[in-house]
Image (cartoon, rainbow, N blue to C red; front, top):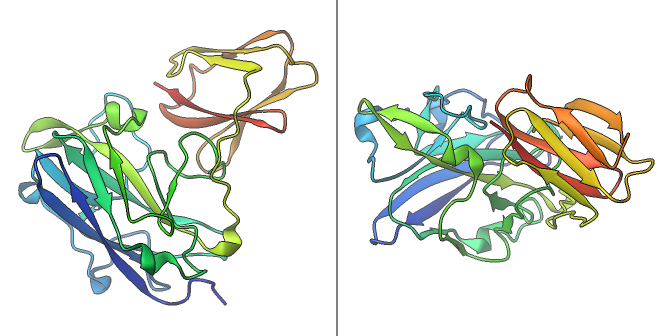
Length: 264
């Protein structure tokens, strides 16, 4: 009935520039839920178990508000997700505390040669309905590691979690499981005929285009929900983002142009 009906677990290793190593175990199971599953080995970490210089754990927080202190419902060293239908992509949100870059992430690529996991990925932006927008993912079936000189995701830059009573910068990665049949596109759809600024934005978003006639501007959240839908009126279009919640959005222009934006 489900494409991912079997259980699967794998270990992911994180190493900072000083040689310190931390690991998490991730995977999927038809018995997993979106809450903490103790019977699957998911145990909540307390604050005193987290190294504020270098620590990696899975969490339930995906999009974070700028400047707000948000404590996740759980932090785990083992996170198992489930699949609700064949074409749905499930992923683990990974929080990374790293004061010493570069950061190297390693995994066993042989475990991702199976067609049920062939398009599994690691990415710095939250994967959603517009998975092919923004930063391209690294396919876990094609390599066994990736090194980040720093994690350039806006959510990480603006996210501070209170641990030990002090604010800590936490970066975010996303590791997802996807099959051959998911037909993921891993290339960015870019087009030089449009400019979108400022990004991140707080109030007005400027969309400038030379070939704007007949083009439709659409804005989606990370779940694929359409929040804005309007035809280009002029060469320069102004979009009021004041009432949008802080976080990550996708703007789509016409059929070919997709762009990632951050609302502060």
